[in-house]
Image (cartoon, rainbow, N blue to C red; front, top):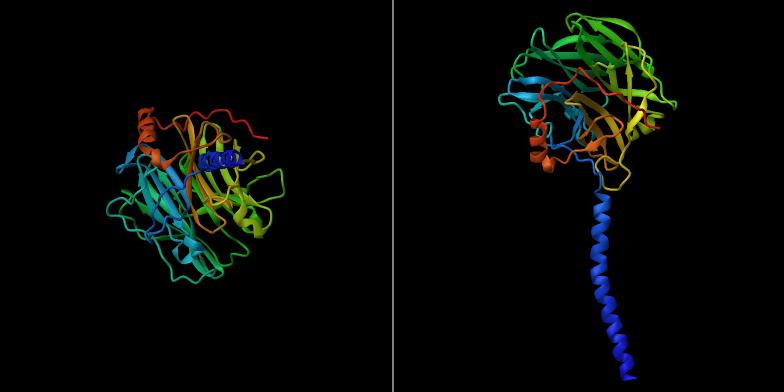
Length: 360
């Protein structure tokens, strides 16, 4: 009887020791699996002290422009507060670390906010190499009116007074949501979302006076409404990243789509390139929002806006040789990444675009 008790005691001790080893190991494996392919949020601090940078637009220069190779506009949107959705400018030399250039004061504009009635939104930057001017455009809603403003700079620090670019006195009849602008072939070209989620295209010789061209053809496999977009010009044509939704209640559950066109208006069917994270407690597990991208050194770099189910927002960074095989860049490893990035050719490769295969 005594020997039996001893055996039971030894077995219990063995089981206890086994569990003490197994449980931490299991937790470690679960955590490692959960963190696999995690998409990191960049630490971009606004003038309000938050890091909920939203609606990014990034442009790259062949050589540093006023001390920086990359420039970004964004609008903070902490906890969905439209009073802080004002145009900001930051710059970087490695795509990871973004800072306010010395002497620049953000935001570029503020309004006496009335939620859902008066607020700024949808900032975008474009560079004119002929005049060497960087312009920041943004959309302002004032009750029923919509105004597109812009401010210009030649050094990224000192900005001219804002100018009115476009006015719509009734945004239910004419709107200019998420204006995406490029300078191409000596003229400015703009794509924007009008009422009924129709994408429109227009041109301008000076970036101020615009002539509407025609409606843009964007289709999806599903029945979706186009929301926010970005455009770049490469040898492939006009490449677009766009978010879309099926029902208004799902506006914060959008996916990111890619399409391209050989001209400015006839785009191939848009395909999914990025979905919201499915794992719990991730910062991007609710939906993807307006995203921006550049093509450089044989790779795409995608700055994607996203939101969590807890209503936290921000901008993440992905890279890939094509847009259907994107990988995350861990900001904590930026030193190694920066060294590799800077050791690659510095030529701004907007000339050669790889062939792109659509994902199923």
